[in-house]
Length: 215
Image 1: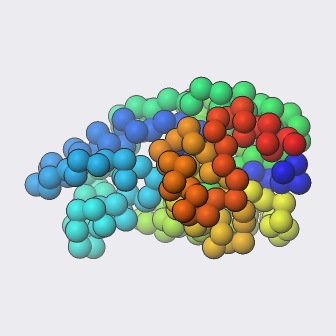
Image 2 (image 1 turned 180 degrees about the horizontal axis):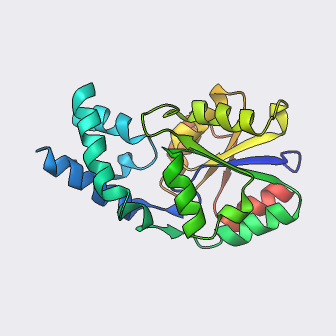
């Protein structure tokens, strides 16, 4: 695996545990709009928030935009910092960067929030590019974000690039753009989910991931 010298990292569930902030903000929006929150909230962690409101609450396009606006009332001021860096992640990033790997972030989270989180938690120093969605929903899908990051970094040889993430949408987005994907098990996705999605590699811990990537 040492041939992958450009590594694209998902953010939520891969670099940081953002569970608390996302779910509290989602519940805030759902309750304000009179929707009952499903018992299984884990399914909201990973996919773009617009897709979650539409798919899991059955909202139409107008309701989705209203819900997103209410969600952001809380998330943009409080929720994005109800977050923590996973144990072992800074050490993993330090090892990879010191070995000459080019590190980038490709997240479906709005880019403006992703940059603030990376800066707040001391991770921005490791990444050459941090790409995400726009607030208006542009680049919501993971394959769109990956294409955006590759273009910004002027990368044409995709055989050297690996996507690293914790959910099925990371794997699907990688494969749609011709990349291989490493699924990680310290985030929100399970072994079963990542295997069914077709993850090319699976790592149990940040240390294991670094060991595999450095060969």
